[in-house]
Image (cartoon, rainbow, N blue to C red):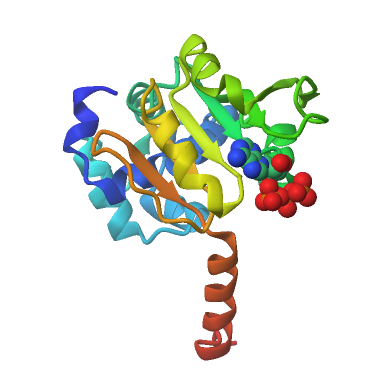
Length: 214
Ligand code: ATP
């Protein structure tokens, strides 16, 4: 990551991939400039937030002109390290894990699931979506050899911490945790937690208690 990223607030940094994806589409359709109102409508972030976010990376939109799409794109490409592919491992080739392997992420950005792991003999040695599945016994070795930086956890919650303890010894710097387990990690490792069941429940709660006005 470049030094510029360090100064950007975390909430802003989290929105960068969203902006980046939209700007890539705009660029592909030949657009040279975009207003914060247009961006706001497309990415569903209010325009005051967009203006503040963009001011952090020196993109000051001109009144009546908007933002220069090329400038923003080259900034995002640099900041998000899009020239390099981030190597990802997926651990737990169950229903969710299999779906991720088939999807992979290469279409959207430069991340790629390179290797997968499971304990079941009928899965080990196969390829799913071109990704080879290894046995958990080879976890540390394969992660080290492939210089894997990010791990996606789609295992049962009961084994998530034990696996985390193993992978945080090597090159892995980030974990995308799809299990409901809350993980303890060294301070050098970043964990993002996605609990689909909680997200769904929370959406349903909001629908019931804060119905949108028609
Ligand atoms: P499935 O229907 O294939 O069981 P699931 O997502 O409902 O999918 P889970 O019980 O959540 O099943 O397990 C997810 C995957 O994690 C399974 O493929 C399982 O074999 C694998 N798994 C279980 N324990 C471990 C472990 N210790 N290390 C790695 N993978 C594991």
